[in-house]
Image (cartoon, rainbow, N blue to C red; front, top):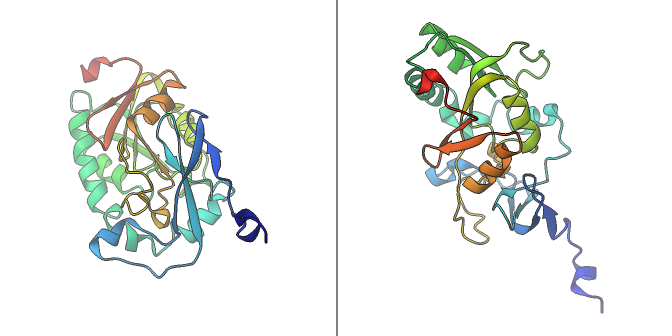
Length: 252
């Protein structure tokens, strides 16, 4: 008779390394690919039978999966950000861009002449709404616009709403987003943070591979992530955050 490992061979390693701080990250749990954020509202998609394993960093608490690390942009567009995505995130079409446009307009009200970039802007609805308000707004999404050239200019203000939980490469994504800022610029972004996620709580609504939620942050993980590039993070709450090196005059 063989060992349990011989009899039931694990399909993933029991330990990975944190994508932010490189500390050891044991397995946290496993769920079906079709688990989505709308299940709390009764939206249950048929199970696919495809397991997605998540790890949790022992130092900064980041919860992440490596299941999508080998995916191309086309893979994400085909299997996650496709025509059925609205089923698991209906607010991304109109409600969220409208609310974010109101927030940005208020945030930069002291200087609406700022050059603004919405990084990860999806269909560009937010940028369109900001332009209607007379704001110099631009949009670029590394998935939706991956065939288009990156913006070549620099910006006073970069927004990145609902982006960081979607990337399998948090360091590369943040480096790219911050790279659009000119000296003294700031980055306003949203991602839900959970500093006290219970052990093996794979039923948590935000851990949702079908939504593309593959990197779940804590406040310490965000601080460590942005510190790699010389930025500090101010947390307005558990969802909205500001990355900056110093407070610009228009924000003081």
